[in-house]
Image (tube, rainbow, N blue to C red; front, side, top):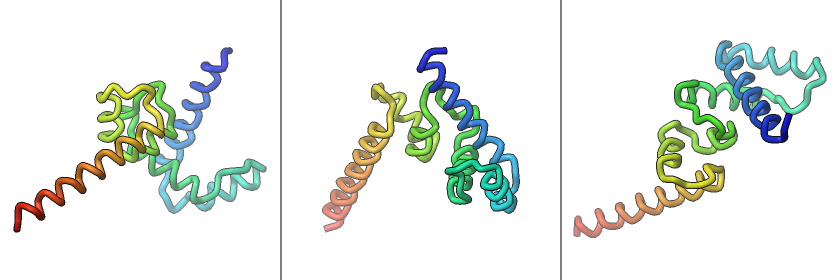
Length: 121
């Protein structure tokens, strides 16, 4: 197994955990967090479990981009933003690229708001 294969397996495992959490009621997350802690597994607080569950619900399998890490999906926050980034030809599709696109969108919205205010005068 190559390093790339191992990383892709890690991506699949993270999605699997998120999908399993999405399949249970949110009211069970605290109990699951306790089970994980009793099993001696570190790094899966109730906060983290809620985040994993939430991003699995926001990105159903049909909306996920293959070979793009779950971290980048989470950073994008929505399938629409991630798809927009992928269509833009940004290479690589990364958390940095997501931040750049968000900044560009925020700047554009700010400029448009200024133009609208100027038009009202």
